[in-house]
Image (cartoon, rainbow, N blue to C red; front, side, top):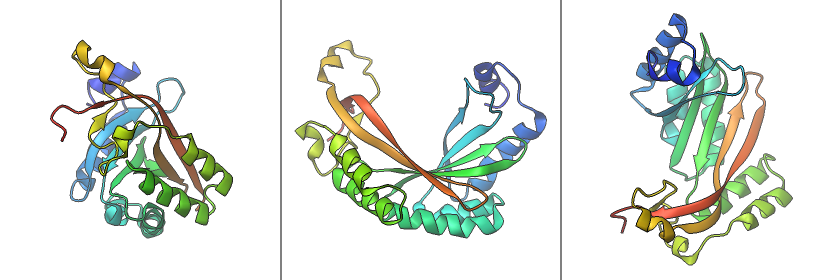
Length: 207
């Protein structure tokens, strides 16, 4: 990944220090987190490589401590737990240059309307979102009745089917994709909510 894929995608090589740090971060996080994907900026001059880990909400502080974030680990873990509530799909974002950070990102994914309602309520309570904006976001969503079941969007995917005959089975949707909290070293906190508009297809073999 660091020797071939990223240099080809970025059209530049990675420095030795950055390559070594990426490898050591993935290894250090392994006891509590799983690397989900790697990202990089293609259209802006940002040398950071973003590592995105799947990690249980209650282990964010532990993961950050393993990565050497010291005194920042527990406050970030506590804040993430408060906002995340009972959500289970969490992602931790770590930017790597020749050092780590300084920004730390935590993503929250919800697949059902009631889960989103709870997340928006908590964000509003802690002044990360205005009540007016939370109402507007919740009402922006539109989805067919098929997505209102107990599993929400979990049995569906936005991946375009390989079988062209299945293209017409796509369900048009407008959904809230995920929320991201960005923690800065000075203690400041920024919240963003990402939207999705497109089609979803039922996963092969989904019940």
